[in-house]
Image 1: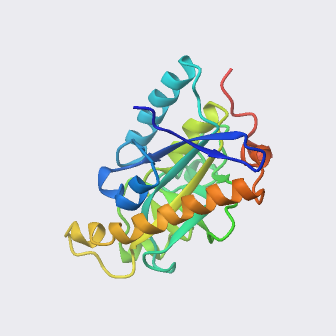
Image 2: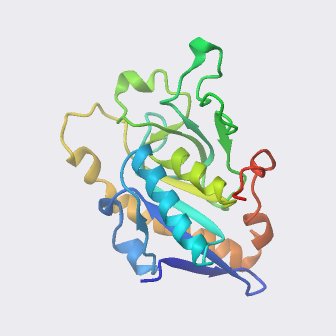
Length: 234
């Protein structure tokens, strides 16, 4: 099954988009109604990195790389509005801290990726937030030291893989938890995914509309932030 979603800009030029999500539970009826068929890349930064590299290698070998990756799903925040969807303006990796050796917190030693990965694409009508990636579900005490507006478990890893292939990415995150202390029940996450599915579909619809109306140009959408343009596959 072809999982590439095609939108069109104001000049009818195609923009080919691959949607990736962490888990089937996040993929609901509203996204299905839009004709979106995501790649499910697994939960956590390790699964996300391994699977994204594998997917992009296969697409590259076939000559069918998309123009854009859309990483969409859920996350937590203590301050952002519950069940609302935000687009990431920057990503950080909260699991990495080599600062005792003098490295900037969040920067992987000897990597040319910065601790903070900017995303310059802006979908009109979707609020922005900074997003932190890590391998743990956030609790109230962890939010006290979170250096971002929202937390999730894949985006920094996904974008790292995308950059190796010279691909831009957008991140859409719906806030499913963080407003109340978690009690060990999965329903604290899954009970809100249907609402988030609707909001994710609406945000993707705004992306489609912005392209069609020229509020986002195809060229600007497909341009990497200047600080990241060197991260391209040979």
